[in-house]
Length: 528
Image (cartoon, one colour):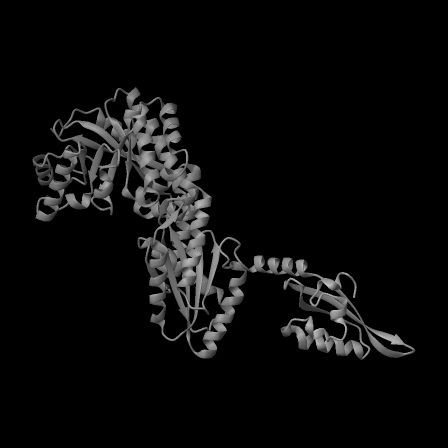
């Protein structure tokens, strides 16, 4: 026994004498090691691995070679050489783990998904049970990365993984596919409906606030679910089906779960086609802006115009913003679209000024994703400077969805925008979740009453009371009130009687392209 051997336990030469090697070897490896020693004593050289403990009880992995000792053709003993390969084995285990697991969350990664899915299909088929596959995508996660950085996004993902693990059974599998998308495999279910409480627990757990470095961050989950009895030739089709159902959940307003149905295939293909067409339209600048006038309730004069995005597809015709804007938001295409709208609207406002049309503001809707990205304030400054506009000529229309993530930063950014002199309007007022609680903190100039309250104000006393309450509250806060969707004379009369400040709707003018709005603005006021 050389000095290296004396580092093992027992660790003196005397301690080795008279002892069997079983005192060194870990009990779980003893039977296998004994077989190797027996084979070496029988004359066959051996090479194997065994785990032993050193004098400090640290577990080591040894690469052992056993050679029979021959004297005059007779085996008289065994010569052993042991090499410590513990560090190498640790490295190999780490490589193996990294190959099959996500390094950030410790969950299995997509490389391991297919093998696990095949195994779960086999289990469900053999036991005649059901297999559920869930695709989970985080709502609002991209805005966290874009607005406050990837460190915070990573911390959210780590905690999401921990919360999800606590909500499933030991035999279930959670896989991080990449980004903010996860797959959950639930084998061995007795009934289809057994997946529902699991989905509900996962969604509730994910939706709880994430406190990271003193900031409360919020995400929710859109979940797609598909079910199988395990009899499927291509198990990965289940992942595709769950993914389709997840996109359906996104389209249904997020933070819900949806089931896969056979008709989803066609709808998903249409969604993918629309996204491709959208990218082509962005690259070729195939969009147009239409403008809808905003009318002063007292004078009948146009005091502003709102820029509204329009897309006329070469083959499919007019596509509603309600259809393509959600697709753009999901894909991130909303960023270049928003930049184009802002730049084009400001350029055309400058053109109106050159034609002698002055004293009006340009209202532009701001995407929450665009707003939450860094350099937003600098972007506004650059556009105003580029087109030679004063800050007071621009009005940004925001919605309460800006406040869903990192409220304090959103409010701070709004104050910076306000400091430039740009006006801010809160759009779709009354339909959000936090209007009253945050209204006093927002540096806004206007409130736009959502059209859903205006439609029946002349006949529905509830809508009438809500509208009058909003106007009164806004005036007490020194805010201007704009009524959207004004379409009838009776609505105009009611709103005038309630002291609404500005009207916008088909009763006065529909949204129109630039050439028509230029002609409209050159006419004298026709709605005193």
